[in-house]
Image (cartoon, rainbow, N blue to C red; front, top):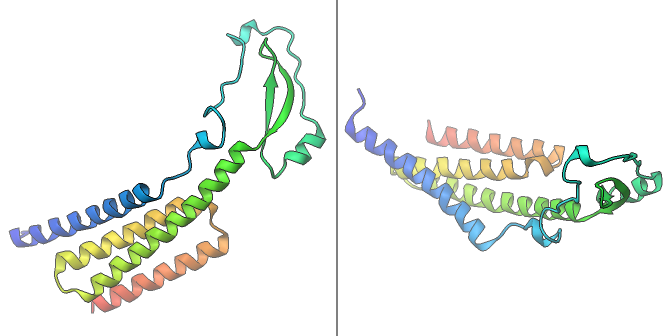
Length: 183
């Protein structure tokens, strides 16, 4: 049977972990805003001038983008169609705003990963210096969750070797904490 005293400890542990994660993440968002799509692509998500209905489009001939445009646009952006008044493709151009937005978002996610990792590690280190069960474990779990959230945000943009190194470091830290705390 779970004692009331233990329930209080676990409740505070969970509350501290959750509020720590919320506090750090809200702080990051408050003082370090993410890039906005509208700042890179005028008018936000661009509406394409399609015909009112696909059935109304008559005699549209598909036009393939040129090899020259494909080569020019390869690492600069996305090939996007330009439409005529009937909703038919008349030509293509290299749209760079999406790539610029993705690149800036990647840098933002990397920086948030660094901030959350530092905050998480600081929480874990502080937890090693304290003795109160709920506070120690709340800070420890909150720190681990912050590190995890940072990793998830940046994982897809992270280099394979960096993924391996980060995973190894986290594993070593967790083993160290378990060894220190669970003797």
